[in-house]
Length: 315
Image 1 (cartoon, rainbow, N blue to C red):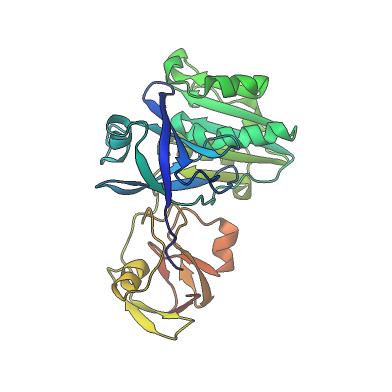
Image 2 (cartoon, rainbow, N blue to C red):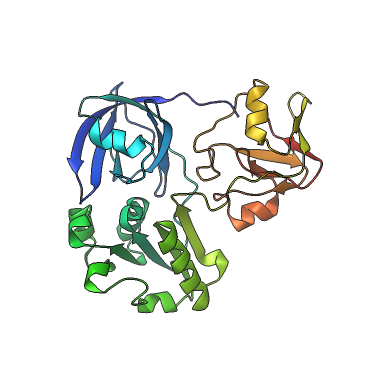
């Protein structure tokens, strides 16, 4: 897996988009259209002195990209820099879009978002509306001043239900009726970890099957852990490398000068997914589906390990 060339973009607009949020509009510096993307896709943004950060694309189909960034109180510099230092006209480098959170096919789709988790789900909702599909978008916020994309949400009409916890309407206080009706439906959700966990537990209690649940997380739920040593082999050259108990496959390959695509390095973004031709992976990521894990034909290099003594990688 070779590293991809970043896209050079210019910030052509920066605007307020609900309390604590800033909406950034990015255009290709070359003047050419940016690569197309599908609902649920994200990009890496390369931030000076911080590295790569991942943000969902929330623009409607156009020649530019939009990302909406919330100022994280515990920011390590990424969101703070975008809020406080970036200005209109500045240049950035971004990755091409990746999508490991695609809109599932279902007779009925329930979208549940909390806070900035709205960004990928809004694009999904608009795509569903365009094809006159059966869906409902539930959006959970603390207060009305946090509402982002108010006009776009208004355009979706009664298919959007907004809940404010300050008014006693949180997911812990009230379970929407459609969440109790899992038949022929897909449940798609995104938001903070506590919201995600609670929603998943509610869904399972009301009869939803794991295969009906589709989510994207802001933080990894699978902390990097040590494990038994093993070896990886590159199918292209036959070269073998030992992966120690405290090492990741990605670290070992990079030290050996093997170019691989890395981004979040937490098993969430999917940048380093690589094919497995032989051996059994020990999946520790938050991006592969249950079906992809069961197939055992790919692995997330930055966090996952091996259950077998050797993995043969499609590299």
